[in-house]
Length: 227
Image 1 (cartoon, rainbow, N blue to C red):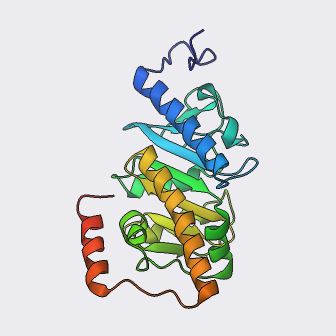
Image 2: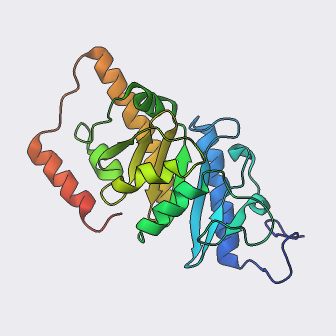
């Protein structure tokens, strides 16, 4: 059997090469999230658009650092599996993001420690202290607490979806969207790095804001054709 093949799917379902590449990329991102300490144990979830009517999702209750391509679950746009397996318990959150943002091609939910700590403390991560913050993250939205795995989670994030692509979820973690899997992963990694820098700067004093002219320029570049 070739590496990455899926032998336990119904005969009517035959993944193409694009899907096999997408499966491999999700597994790679799962390992990177774990290696970077952005998830631990069975935490986090990843999805990507497979086609206009299908999503590819990490399965429920799986170590993201040890994902195999055959572990991933294909779902329809209602979150129902197409073939065996159960998608992530937070699939409702992902579905709402895809529903409201046609430009979104991938969603990553993780528990980056420092960024999550900002959410626990009710502190915002500013977007005008480093160019990378404005350019990669945009304005980081903070969502009120919602019970994980319930409709409360997408309901609380929905009002923020039009104007944001990076979200802190109180007492829960973070979720980001991207124009690709790589774009979404990079946004999550940058979120944690910016959170650390802001935390260290606060230990030393009061973080200084970017000059308005510089911030306006970076923001304009970020908004020019980017998700």
